[in-house]
Every structure is written in C-alpha cells, then in structure tokens.
Length: 392
Image (cartoon, rainbow, N blue to C red; front, side, top):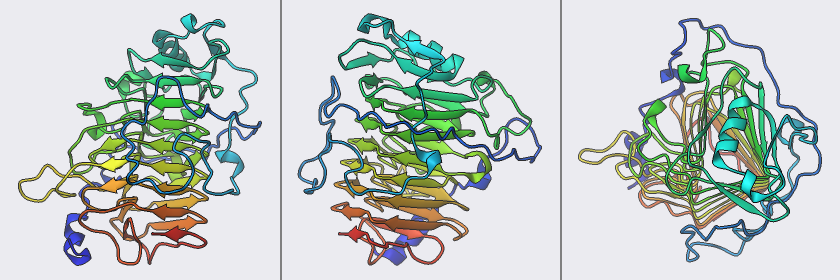
C-alpha cells in the first residue's frame, strides 16, 4: 500500500484523550514523582535463560548484530539518566524463596507483589524458572515502590496461559487511592534483572486488552536489564497490542524507561514488543529482535477485516507523546501492515520520534511505511530525528 493510501488506515481511532478517569470527574493532577535513583552495578541476566527456546525468532530475518540471547544493550553505549537506572535492592522488604527452588513459587510471587516494596529472590545458586499459575497484581495502596529484582537468575513464565504482571490505578479491585486515578504518582513499578517469558493475555478485555507479559495503566513503570521472550496477546484487533508491555497513561506524562533490556519473539495484533496510547518512552541500550505484529486490516479496520498488524516491535498511538531510542538495535521484526520496526501515530501531530546512535535493519512492513525511513511508519511533528543512526 502506498504511503498516501495508508494515511486513512493509520488514522487511529483511540487517543490518550479517550482514556477516561473511571474514579472521579476530577482533573486534578498529582505532583511529579521519580523512581529511586541509587544505581548499583546491574546484574547481567544469564545468556540463556532456563527453560527457554528461540520462541519463534526467525533467523532468516536476523542480521549480524548482537546475539538475541546475549547481553542487552550491545547496540551502543547510552548516557542513561539516573532515573532510568537500576534501583538499589540491597535491603529488600520481601524475599521470595528460602534458599532453594522449592520456595520460589507462583503463590509467593503473587503475595509479594500484592504486598509491595522491594522484592528480591533467594532460589538457590542456579537459575530458576517460576511458572506462574496466577497473574501477580499490584495493589494501589501498597508500596509506593514495587521493585522486582531477579538477580539475573530468575525467569517468570506465563507458560503460554496467562499474563504475568498487572498494574492499573483505575481498577477498583486493586483499590482506588486518589480522586484522579488517571494521573497519580504511584504505584511505581520497576522490573529489573529478570526474564519474563511466555506470557499470554489473549482474551483479556480490561482496558481493551494487550500486554501479554505486563499490563500497566497509571502510576509509573520502568524496565532495567531484563529479557522478554516469547510473549503474546490477541492476534487481531485494531488498537490492542504489546506482547511484552502495554502501557496506558503515566503520571504527569512522564516517560516509561526501558534500559539495557532485550525483547524477542513476541507476537500480537500490534506491537510485537511494546504498545501504548498517549504514553512517552525513553529506550536506552536495548535490543528488539524477531517480534511480529500479526493482525490485519490496520486501524481503523478496513472493511471485512478485524484490524491490527502494525508496529512489529513498537506500536505507539495517541496525541501528546514522544519516543526516544538511544544506543539500541531493532532488527528482524515484522509488521503485516505498517511499521515493521516502529509504528508512530500522533493524532494531533504534536508527537516526536528521535533515534540516536541506534541501528534499525531488516524490519519489513508488508503494506506501508514512511518513505526514507525503512521499517518506520510516522505521523507526527515534522520528521523523525535519526542522528548517528543507521536505517536499512
């Protein structure tokens, strides 16, 4: 499909302004809050997480960049803001396990996340996979910091049956804590030094679905030195997505930080790795490989089609938001419709996309993308900034 013919198909029907406050009619906003910024040296996840395979990463699409299972961030060395770095977990509030794998159970993870605070794991010296038999849900009245630190040894697996983590400030079942759930500075969820694999949110309908591994609405969320592999969500639908992470709204419009992390083998209608509406992202020193947007019919869905298929790695929609990708590699991803690497639509054309010192290559868009920006479909302010980056 030519670019001009794709404009209507990409005119996304949901924006950040469509996300209504279900807690109150108040429009009061909360004060800016930051994540803890103490930054000990991060622990590197194991090069091959226990119990994981390639999860459908298509070697025929892969280039010659960093290994899909190697250390994240091989694409460059980024000047990472303090707030985007790992949290100091040397004094945890809660420890999952008692020194052996037997104590590291799904129930223990669920209970720890519900209780909040800084959470670490003591599952013995060897890497361990914890198969989740229920989704771990953040309660809005705990924390306000919820930090999950796997120490580079822990995999949380959804076994292809369920979403792994859920946080939603506008879900009354998780307790309303302010009169303006759409913009509050807590909870603040950090996932670090952890592998999250085989999450599946197919059939989940809350807030429109998506978020195969992690779903977040409100508060703040960041990911540091972690690996997402083989996660999935619904295969069709015009505006749902995020096989690894789906985010709807962040306090005061502050960004989601992704640092030194890897996303591979994710599949969803849109956004084979990340998806959001009206949310800004800052992505540092990370790798996206072998993710796919497998829906068809775009957004709004063309006649007779279910919709979706955009943003092989990243799908971003809404009005006032920005995406910044620094020192990262996005390769071997695929979109059945548009944006094999990144699909970016700012409905009011105020949003901006910046790539700095990054590499995008071999990210086919089957139907449409923006001329001169291989793998990207962009509607926003001006043109994407690509300083020091390679696109091909």
